[in-house]
Amino acid sequence: MSHRTLTIDLGTRSYPIFIGAGLLNHADLLRSYLRGSQVLIVSNDTVAPLYLEQLRAALSGYRVSQHIVPDGEQYKTIASWSAIIDQLLSERLARDSTLIALGGGVIGDLTGFAAATYQRGVAFLQIPTTLLAQVDSSVGGKTGINHPAGKNMIGAFHQPVAVIADTDTLATLPQRELAAGIAEVIKYGLIRDAEFFGWLETHADALLARQQTALITAIARSCQHKAEVVAADERESGQRALLNLGHTFGHAIETGAGYGTWLHGEAIASGMLIAAELSCQLGWLDRASVMRIAQLIKRCGLPLAAHANLAPERLLELMAVDKKVQAGTLRLVLLQAIGEAIITAAPAPEQIIASCARIGAEGF
Image (cartoon, rainbow, N blue to C red; front, side, top):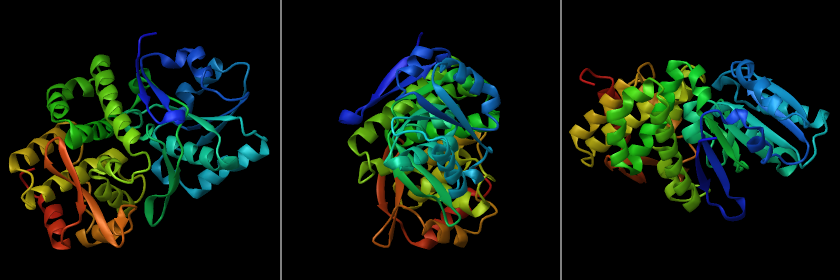
């Protein structure tokens, strides 16, 4: 079995990330991270027909049940979380049970939150099947559900026992979702690795063509960056907030458009470009860098202006309902250069509105 292995260093709660092709076929690897004899697999109605039976076959001998959620961000809700808890209770899963998240970011967040809250916390294993989940949401222990007023406003920090990222699952991923995952990969280059951003400019076509070597390199490098940030600041009291580049704008876009209208990565791509343009308007980031960012986003098939039908005033209103508001002040992640991000208080509303307008204009 050829794969890459990284570690999230959190002392006694440290865990590995396995990245490679065919990992779902290796029962011994999966079994080594199960607690007890009871397992609940949570998946959605898109992923389950593809990989659920393969996973169940690897878990023969365990008491395995399943919970299938409709596919889509709009189902990351209190009702979906409650339904998982109801099943855990009705099937009397014990505290030494393991929940397995088989799917993308919605399934990972939802399953993790159920695991965090059931009997005050049970083990869960992440098996992400989208690029976005493999490079970002499955790593770091953020779990949660959405509220009509804001994305991820209900949740908990709860680390998985392991992350198993089988790159073979990306073969069945729609191209739109693959591109959405690349948005989060671009983020790591922008916030802390200019060399990686340059690598992405060179290898974007290989990623879009799903070349295994390029995918494993991008996933491993992204996960390494996230591992380092999470190990230094697990609960986002400081530098982990840098991982939110574009997310304050992106979450507002998702909420304003209606959950499921835009994929998370699409909204984040537009949010990162707004952040870059705002950084330029403030005199921090040069215009050439903004154009490089826009060109890479566009080349990867991502929208530059996912917010086009959302009035800037409404965008600002939604941004005010954000987890990154501290003492009444909204904090943003902006750029001083490609590879160099900072956390700062949001500038004047009119500057944000001007940056949104610029992104929607001709020339990008």
